[in-house]
Length: 256
Figure 1 (cartoon, rainbow, N blue to C red):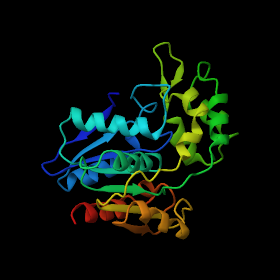
Figure 2 (cartoon, rainbow, N blue to C red):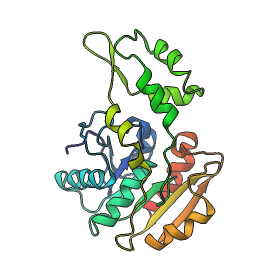
Figure 3 (cartoon, rainbow, N blue to C red):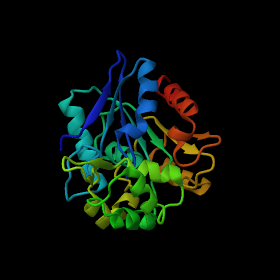
Figure 4 (spheres, rainbow, N blue to C red):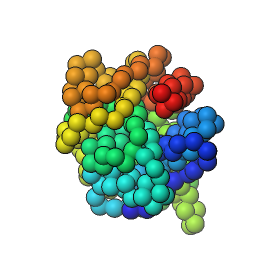
């Protein structure tokens, strides 16, 4: 699958940056620019069924890792570093398991290797309930969606997936039916197909519960070279809540 992407050119090594579920490449634009400003050649991607990338009935980490491999081959990138947030972090870990020798190091942002139970039911109910073809404004969409999601910043993030059609209505960039039907795949565990010896940085938000202390042993069984950094005053959206600290830690790792 040919993924949509944005390129932040640089003269240094290549870095690929990948968003999480319900997201798009725009979510990581600030981090991408910050890493590119330090001299790296940065690509940020829309994963399948998200953003402006193609829709497909298959939605699992094997297919998303294969998309990433195809992108790296198409762009003739030599062992890029891979950075992924949440679902993107699991894509990166899956890639590391399946494609040894094709990347230099990985950064996994606020997600572990374990299985996570589905926890997006209210969000999916709200997205599916929105009469997008009848909505006249984003404000109207926000008001309707507030019955399902009380936090304005979360609503703003999710409703970025709406776009105005040529007939002046709205539609989803997300492949909402497939994501809804296969949301359990987003929480799937990363199977330990090999021991990944390449350098790995796991970044967690101090107030996030996605990576717990008891998860670290399991992570290091598959990624023995992994190190963990905790960003203070940040939850799951580390790169958005503490962008300067996040970029600083990632650059320190990439330059090490």
